[in-house]
Structures are given as C-alpha cells and as structure tokens.
Amino acid sequence: MKIQILGTGCPKCKKLAENAEAAAKELDVDYELEKVTDINKILSFGIMITPGIAIDGIVKATGKLCTVEEIKVMLK
Image (tube, rainbow, N blue to C red; front, side):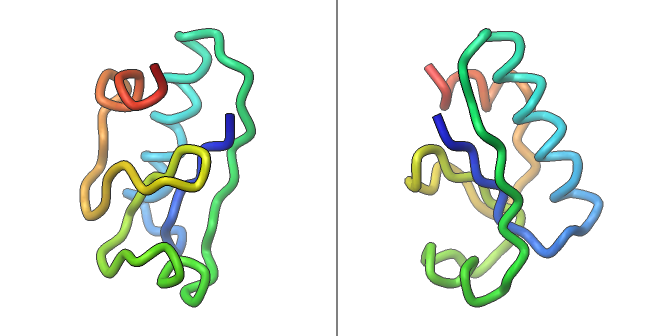
C-alpha cells in the first residue's frame, strides 16, 4: 500500500505524515510512505489546499489534518 502525503513540508504536513505512519503501524499493514512536496506534482492530484493524503494514488482528504483514527478508516 502506498501512502502519499501531499504538501510542501509545513508543520501540518509533517504531523499528517506522522499520523499516517502511526495508523499504518497500528493496523499492521505493509506500506510505503512518500512525501510529495513538489507543487506541480501536488497539483497533478487535483488538489488546491494542503495537506492532502492519497492512498494508492487516490486522494482521500485535502485541506485538513486527519487524525490517526480517520486514517485507519481510509486504510481498511
């Protein structure tokens, strides 16, 4: 499973990455975490507000800091 954090590296983006990693570990899923910081790549996902999170290339949330519990639901 590929988890992509879409953002330029702001504090919310970093926290979202931490939350995603914690969620994946709690669920014991095999994952790869990628931080997408290039603005053109972020825009190619069709999002205009960061941070965003994509699971296997599909955007699941944008413009908010998702909790560990919210991300666990996305990963199931």
